[in-house]
Image (cartoon, rainbow, N blue to C red):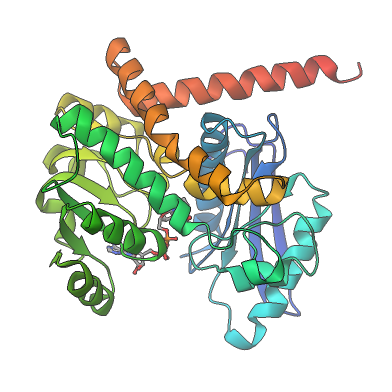
Length: 356
Ligand code: NAI
């Protein structure tokens, strides 16, 4: 793990192999300084195990940053399951995954991520209580976190439209949405309701066509969406889309989306800044889902409480963008610095409490 791409002082990495169900997974715990490492479980077909490890390392670090910036009492972790999982073994594999989570003794709290749904989390819950994002019908609470994520992204887009485009509302603002899954699809609908002019693309052309028909959006191909002219680009597919080269060519005023790890490298953030393109740090923008998941796990919070927390993403982002501007830094670097300082301070307090 120490020499792997994406390693950033992570506390631990656990490899899981369960031949009975075919489950192969990695759980990366970046930090538990602020509390149990919370972060979803992704099911994806990776090129090889090294690629899965890199993804888990990067995503878990992002969760540390996200939870710290959202003011949650959680550290950062992430699980990735190496797909595919055949349907007939899926439920058993998720129960096996739950057993592995249980063995971590509460240091990791899981939930859904790309490729994983509430039914999978219900299977996980048969083996551990360190799980959230359960179906509401099982008494699990708020259910699928995606609508909360989409709402938070909308709030962030409103803030950026105000700051960067000098727009009081989203009427007529051109937003290009890449990826129309659980979050991107919900976001596109919210944007359409707010009067935005949408350009949309998904890797799945049928999904693109359906969404375009429902929202009046202009549909483009998946390979075209990153080169369209728009006010705002909302990456809502997978991470790493903004490479330095792409940042140098984007024809948009701002990038504000749900995807985790949108910047392929920190240098891509610097290129955006040089070009005057506002970048709203992904983990500040997309915290709505973890806020819902955390509320379920911690208990005692109503849907209204969570909605208020999600809406607070707007003012938090506005403050961050103002701070970055005052510092002459790119917002991603400023967010990283703030989050890292919070985690380091919590780690220091924990070290001071520990018996000598
Ligand atoms: P999803 O799997 O429901 O949707 C992803 C969509 O992107 C799919 O429709 C897929 O076909 C499409 N896609 C994949 N590659 C593409 C490409 N190259 N071009 C165009 N479309 C492409 O996933 P979900 O839940 O909507 O998440 C989207 C992103 O937001 C992910 O990066 C995820 O990590 C992040 N995120 C999601 C949260 C949630 O609450 N679901 C919370 C925080 C972050």
